[in-house]
Image (cartoon, rainbow, N blue to C red; front, side, top):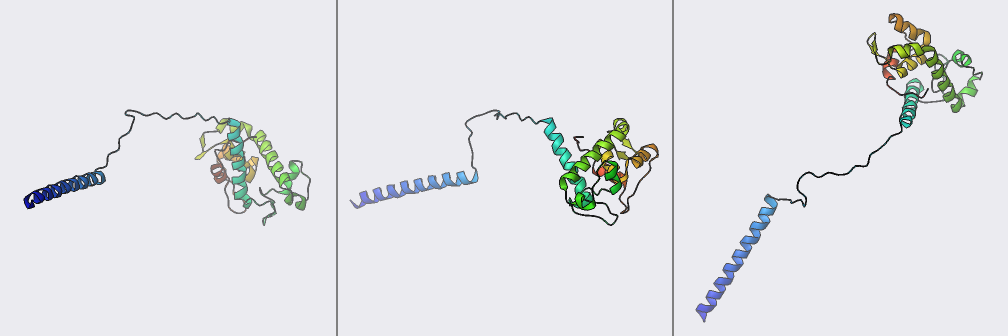
Amino acid sequence: MKKKLNSITIFLLFALALFSLMAFTSVYRAVVNPTIELPVKGIVTIPIEPVTVNEMELIVTSHQAFLDAIGFRESGNRYDIVNSFGYMGKYQFGESTLKGLGFKVTQDEFLNNPELQEQAMQELLKHNKKKLRRFIKKYDGKVVHGVLITESGILAAAHLAGQGNVRKFFRNGYEFKDGFGTTMTSYMEMFGGYNLNV
C-alpha cells in the first residue's frame, strides 16, 4: 500500500511538474517572441473618399491670409493706430492715398471704421493691379534683380512704396526704403505667392 501511494504521489508530482514546465514555456515564449496573425494576407487597400476643394474657396482664403499678414506687418492688425509719420489704421494709409481713392473722411472716422479700412485696402489693391497689370503679366513667376516676382508681391510693394517706385524697380533695379528702413523688395518677397481675389 505504501509503495502504491508512493507511485501515485510520484506520478502526480511528475505530472504537476510537467504541466508547470509547459505553462512556463508558453508564457515565456509569448512574452519573448510574440506573433500576431492577421486574418487577411497580401495587400490590403483602404478606400478613401475623394475630397474636392472649390478653387474659389482657396483664393478667398489666401486673399484673407494676405490681408492679415500685411495688416500684421503694418500695424499688428490694429485699426485704431497712427504711426509717427501720420499713417493710419490696420494698413497704414496716408491721407493723400485715401483722397486719391475717393475716400473723403476725417482721421477719426477712418480709425473708428474697420469696414471702411478693409474697403479702402480692397480699392487700393484693385487700383494698383490695374496700373501695374503690364508688369504683373510680364514678370509674374520670373526672377528680376534677384527677387522672385508674384502678383501679390508686386501689389504689396506698391502698397509700401507706390506704383511709381515699383516701375523703377523693374526698369533699373531701384530699391525704395520707407522711413523705418523697410525695403520694397522685402515686401515683394515677404508677401509673394498669395492668390488674391482682386
